Image (tube, rainbow, N blue to C red; front, side, top):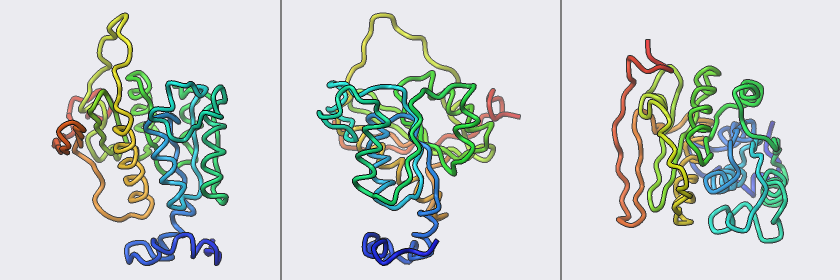
Amino acid sequence: MPLTVEQRQRFARHLSLPEIGEAGQERLQAGRVLIVGAGGLGSPAALYLAAAGVGTIGLADGDRVELSNLQRQILHTTAALGQRKVDSATSTLKALNPDLVVNAYPERLTAQNAPTLLAPYDFVIDATDNFASKFLIADACHRSSKANSHAGIREFIGQTMTVHPGRTACYRCVFEAPPEETPGVGPRGPLGVVPGVIGTIQATEAIKHLLGIGKPLVNALLVFDALAMTFRRVAVQRNPTCRLCGG
């Protein structure tokens, strides 16, 4: 759909980039990204995708806003305490970009609902905070052939990688199975800005995928250390015996 006069003003900085231009902005407008998790990682990812002009964002999260979320989950405010996260997030994103279509799913992703939820989207962002969900998303994206961005955070460290199912190393190539849970050990951190850095990178990968520009973060795990202020790129490769994508 052609850009309106107002949209040309809103996205003028994008239109000035040869890699995007008007045709690219129209591709973003037609793009559809599913974000699983409207918390620390999902907040910056969703905000930057909305600001960039991605036309449709799906948000899947079954939780409600709690006071301890607000140190890092910048989609939500104190006034939203007790609200469903997807409702709070929708209000914030629509205030930023009224043209945005937000599909809110106030539920957790499961093996049963994953095929239906993933089907309409071009790219999937894993913004969850537990291993069970990360493995479920990795498996569901592989079966649905959906390009996706994994990310994880802990304390002062964040990591992220992009997966093109069947063509690049997958999540299970790097992490074969969920680690054992340690009873009685609660969450440690993270420093609030760490998911901001990593979630923004996830949004960048989604935008590049929709536009077909640049080099995706595939076959590599990007590790960010906030205390040392370093980025380390760790090369990974497909595991021929991977239980998900192996031969």
